[in-house]
Amino acid sequence: MTARPWTVLAGALSVSVRATPKGGRDAIDGVAELSEGRSVLKARVRAAPADGEANDALVRLLAKTVGVAPRAVTLLQGAAARNKTFRIEGDPARLAAALERALGEQGRRK
Image (cartoon, rainbow, N blue to C red; front, top):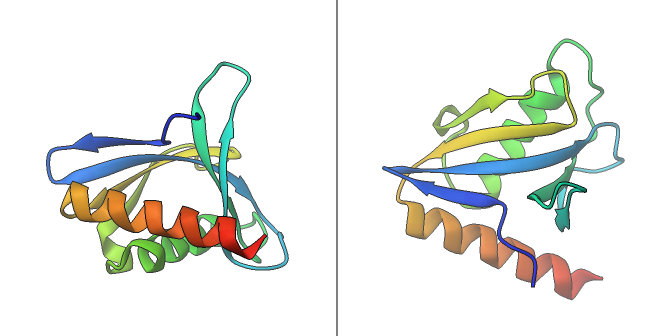
């Protein structure tokens, strides 16, 4: 089983994301394991990776997925890279449960 791509913090989750800009739609596409063994949440957004548009779209997608306001989602690392780390403020158990639900729904769509 692949490890979950998030870490519980005090009052937040840290989420590792592999982004696909210009992906045709805004969606969570599951979990992938990188070559170094780290798990990442696969996410695609319609926005292009110019002027921070894809990062903004990822913030909105993560916020919608876990049910928080976009201001609760902060990009910590990877502004210009495909692999990014986001901090999502809120109850870690509730946020993790929302991500688990999204991954379960993603599995049923395939």
